[in-house]
Amino acid sequence: MQNIRDIRRRIKSVESTKQITKAMEMVAAAKLRRAQATAESARPYSDTLRKILRSLAGAAEASHPFLQQREVKKTLLVSITSDKGLCGSYNHNVIREVERLLENYQDNEVELGLIGKSVCNYFRRRIWNRRFEYVDFSGNMDSRRVTEITRDIIDLYLSGEVDKVILIYTRFISTSIHHITVEDFLPITKSDDEEKTKGTSADYIFEPDSKTIYSEILPRFINNRIYMSFAEALASEHAARMLAMSNATKNAEDMIDNLTLLRNKVRQTSITRELLEIVAGAEALKG
Image (cartoon, rainbow, N blue to C red; front, side):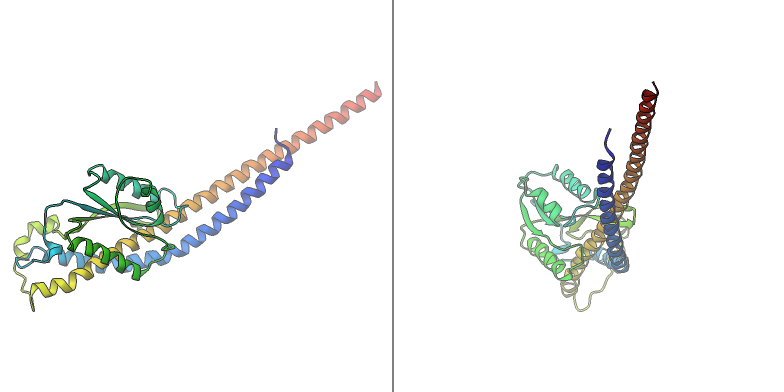
């Protein structure tokens, strides 16, 4: 049986770990509030803009490269994970979804756009071609780097180096619910509801002309979609980390309770043994 000194040392170690996980939980909760506010405030604008442009995509005058379907020879998979760990299965779920999608491609048919150290470190040890990598966001929104990512994607698509772009990220639903989302990003397509009403979409009148309108609006729309995906991913990351640290804190508390009970049992056993030795010694002296 363990001695009391070892048990006390373990209790002290677990208590130190508990303080760390509790502090990390509070930090993640503070970051979650900001990230959630950012995502939820931007979501109505993003959803409305996407609905309008996908409806316009069915207009007869639509001729912008972002709207044109072409033979898919190479696909770009853009995945968003975190730079740091300690967030449960958040990163693993995204990487697993990317791996599932890669099963449908040969190595010369797909390239990867990686955002976040977790997914970058994982695919550096794999055969797939990495087109670009972005790391060191530190769990914060960076509009300038989001614009850089958007520019990279647009350049690859317009140059014909890739014919299709797919986004893989985690959509924030609530603190405890986050869904892995696979989104056909480029080219912009009509939804099923818009297909049913495509007759009305051809009645749009463009001023000054469709080319000017699409050239101005579509790059902004694409930048907004990247921004929104990143905002959703950040909120999901902080929520996952907060829950993971909360569970770790509870586990530490349970371990402390169990170790305290074990310490008391060992101490009681030691006291009982000493009493028996004293009684036995006293009986021996009488005899």
